[in-house]
Length: 146
Length: 146
DNA sequence: GCTTGACTTCAAGTTGACTTGAAGTTGCAT
DNA sequence: ATGCAACTTCAAGTCAACTTGAAGTCAAGC
Image (cartoon, rainbow over all chains, first blue to last red):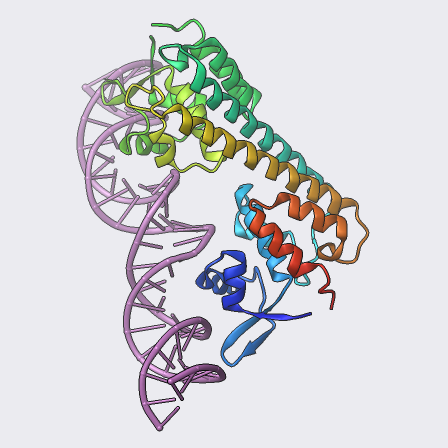
């Protein structure tokens, strides 16, 4: 397995060297050698960084991301937890899709205020994370036209 | 249009009163009256809050969310920007779906390290935000088995 | 052999998004 | 009329995730 200097890793991954050091400090990644003073990393750290950025964009904290792998970078979560997280991600993906539909609708809809457009309201309810929130919206918006 | 006290709004929306005041301070929402000292909000602020929480979970900052609406809560972005954002959301939704597929795969796959499992690598590349990142992964991982 | 540039450490600073604390005010129930 | 919970303001505190600064080290090219 080839080793790569921190500068190379930074350029390849788009992650600042200061961030790489920070990630190492908090135990998220590991350098395995030095070239002089310079940290060197295994090439597959790049894969790890891709996973980290993915996890971040999915809303996981660095701590959560770190806890998903043990020190040999092998997944350290029980299956049930993994599929729970997968379910959660699926829900989030659907919410994003709903939000994107809303934006597209807003770009088209001629209603004076979208908060009063029935179709917009429907999309909004579809985008709500919980049943409770959907109900509240139902009551608060419909029939409260000034 | 009925007005609601901050406490009610907080309970209905699940957003802390301190957060509501903070949102107001930064101009994200508006109270329209007082009941004694107490802030009162229009009921449709609830809708706004649903949008805000949605936007947050999609990774927008409060500032970005604020900039999407003008002071009358009407969308203040040109159509092209709206559909760009929608596209971005769709991409993000697909990435999340890919990440969820990865998690499900990890729950099943018997490979010793997932970073070495070809199917996992394929999923990872599918999950990458940019073509550039995909290429880098391609080079860094494949054929570098220790 | 000297400069240069990319690194090093360590501490301190920054930003976004809130929360907390202290001290005061109000509406409502008893 | 009194007590109290739920508010008020304003300043300060917190937390995650980094970034910046100062002072030093190293190796590569001129």
